[in-house]
Image 1 (spheres, rainbow, N blue to C red):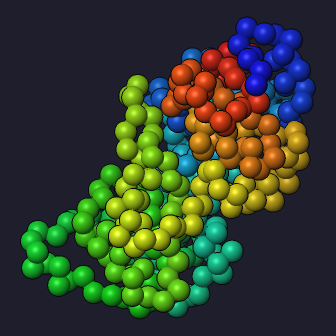
Image 2 (image 1 turned 180 degrees about the horizontal axis):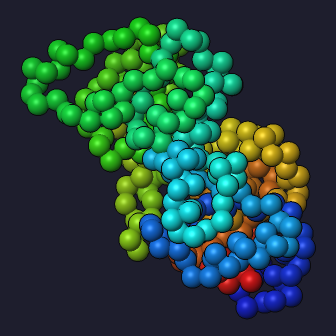
Length: 292
């Protein structure tokens, strides 16, 4: 593990060894709606140096189109084909890897980003915002019936998570043979406002525990997302670096994918956490804004 902060020679050697950077967003590029100091300048200089820049996030609440709007709002140069989120990874996997039957539909626990990406791939779906209104009494349970057309349940982060959504997802997975159980990611927490809150993995436990079944995870650190990214962009793994703030998702994702890894200390991982973990990044820097 090499500490890059304040070491110009080490930074230059690191940059010379990389052609493509995969950047996590939350905790690396920004905190909420605030860009981390000097990051815009660093990204601009990397482009000027001829480096390929990609943004890879486990946040499924936004589609690529919505993420692009955020980049524009924050005055960060980015293009739609550089953005790869877990919502898109899930939609791509369902359409192209599962070759999802046209007579089946996906039940979504999640937000607009998942719906928009499923639409972009032409995959039928139900649930999500349509089920934001929760059940009001135990007698309403009778309204939850199995739908044999549901061939997959896709679980992502949902600010409007409720018992109706959990009950419907459970019903489809419990009763429909060969119904696929999928999740955009399994992050237990996510950073916001200078602290952390329960993430998709925490919500997901309420469904996976009663089913006694683990979903197929389609975001970091699982290899499914990496294979899609590498194949889509024709990347040389040995000259690609994953930059992130989480050891158990970003850095593990890079390691398992055969990439170099750079940990930034502006997000979830603390100095104490770094000392106590078995997941060791190749490089560490205080902030992406300190790279150049």
